Image (cartoon, rainbow, N blue to C red):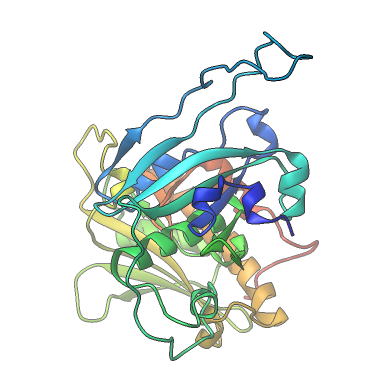
Length: 333
């Protein structure tokens, strides 16, 4: 494992460090849009100091290099995360440094800490250590609270979305499984009638049935399987997430959302970081089915698709989810 001082400057080695890989399609250019990912969670996001493409050059020392200017290096920026915290970066990691962290592509590191340089005040020891993201185990001595916990939760969500990782306090590795992100929300440009919603879901699971939403307006479709659990697809009223706040809606922002969720046979396994093999097999199938249903629904009603962390996802990302995780994978119906 690469040491943290090799990833970020010395003054940031005790910060939380989120490592975001660049995908093969990035072509060596900028990585994922971290400010955009931050805006999906925090109301007050902006550059306190924008990053520069290249910092000022300096003159090399020593007789041999007298008068020779060293290559200019990009300088990191400082991004505000809400009222109390900031993200400093990006700090580029070449292929070797990224590989030492288990990343398949070159990556970028961002240091997350308080904007005033102070330390966050934390709570007590966690009473439960078996959480999906491993946060309780990473902070076994004292859990983050308040805004720091929000920053840590966001960093874990970013790591899961980008197949990256988080170094909590600069040392505890959290590597969330991207496959654990299953549920989706479709914000359609128009309401979807109950009959049309049933038709969409039946194209994925033929035995789906229409139900009334318990205790409220709206409607939902239940797709029950004997081995992989249940798929619930429900239209209900909702508040537009931050990720879509700046989006242009020709007919006005939608007031309803279609939520697509998976309920496994053993719901407890949704809360553990190392679920059973059978759970993972069922989860992969359910993930592909929900992605297919979301694609069909989006094709009919347009709008936007958001994942379970509140990030907008693209048609290409849905296609990756629809791809069968294993040969011959299919739903039990």
